[in-house]
Amino acid sequence: MLEKFIVWDGTAEDEHIINMDELLKIGEEKLAKEPGIVSEAENKVNPKDTAIIIYTSGTTGPPKGACLSHANILAQMNSISEIVDDQTLGDIMMFFLPLSHVGERVPGQFFRIYKGITAAYVNDITKILDDIKDIRPTFFGSVPRIFEKAYAKIMSEVDNAPSLKKSLFSWAKKIGLEMSRKEQKGQRPGPGLNLQYAIADKLVFKKIRDIFGGRCKYFLSASAPIAVEILEFFHACGMLILEGYGQTEVSCFCTLCSIDDYCFGSVGKPIPGASLKIAEDGEILVKGDIVFKGYLNQPDLNRQTLTEDGWIYSGDIGKIDENGFLWITGRKKEIIITSSGKNITPSNIENLLKNDPLIEHVMLHGDKRKYATALVSLEHDTLMAWAKTEGHDNLGYEELINLKTLKEKIQASVDRTNSQVARFETIKKFVLLPAPLTIETGELTPTMKVKRKIVEEKYMRLLDELYE
Image (cartoon, rainbow, N blue to C red):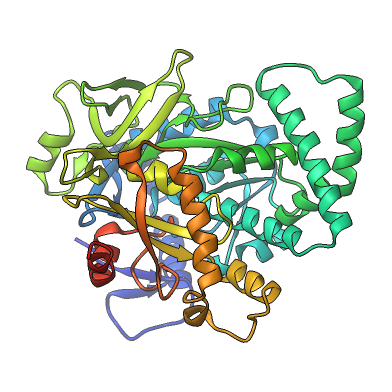
């Protein structure tokens, strides 16, 4: 039972609220009277005891309280320590997700304390690319949207740049990608490529690294897929984004790419102490000390989620390649089954469409319908930059999405996406949403994933019109 709320500063006339300074004073007095009280408390803690209860973000259903033990948390931190060394982490990490999220709480807050690394918290997630220049982190874990936003901003600026700058950027990008692909294959670049890359780095890539503060060479991305095109672009610029996979129920990560062992598009290999296997229907199962105790007060759900021998059903669909890398192919509950019985995995198609810098979020729809359609939310700043170049800077978001030229531009991106998927997976129709999806409106989770049921219900009228 919750007894007290602790506030950092300020006061309140409520018996259930206590100020941090007051709490510290009580603790000092208690410790003075009973010097052994801390050791006694430590000795009473069992590693299997619940340490924290974290509620899942719930993109497809109601949040559930996941009980993580002390042993779960220590297993997670020890495993990450074996993959990411102190030199890679540096001396300052940057955070922006709420501490109620497992990624920020365990490999963020707890791991930082475990390693003695300074933390910098962003005040406003919408201005994260401004804050990062001031913070200048040495290591940064993020969700894909931050990298997608930075990529969109860069591409938008290039599109609006003079011809000479465009040509320089294209040349540098070509050289950078050539260098990146050699590194990915474990090949050594020749002296000519090294020289060209050094020039490209000085003229172009250094400026792009400065967007992230200039000190960060390694990033961590999780919670959703990120386009290989974006991963390769930043790698070409001298920044390696390592993808990982996991969920609250496994104390955060169960797989990670490492600096010396990565494959773009995959989410890495099992972290030390974790085991993976793929069920007959393609669902990923995980086992190890990182697997949680179960959901709070939900015994029936626990029996459905955890096997008697310690495996947890992740709810995600994937495959393990011949080199041991895990590839996520979809979310089991999110698979769309059309009226003709075809199975469509929405995340892969949505991710392809998001390669367009103008597109911020996509939600594929079509369950029990005769074909797939999509709701498209545009990136506000990129849209405004496009509008300015087209001479429409006097128009607002809602007016812009009705422009024929904009719809044609998005249709071209839809056509490119359709050319890369099976015929039954193609997006037959789409609609531009009248406003961007946001966390504040309840349409996105804290990690900026679309809450499908909420968005579907909100825009069902628009979806129905796509099938008339």
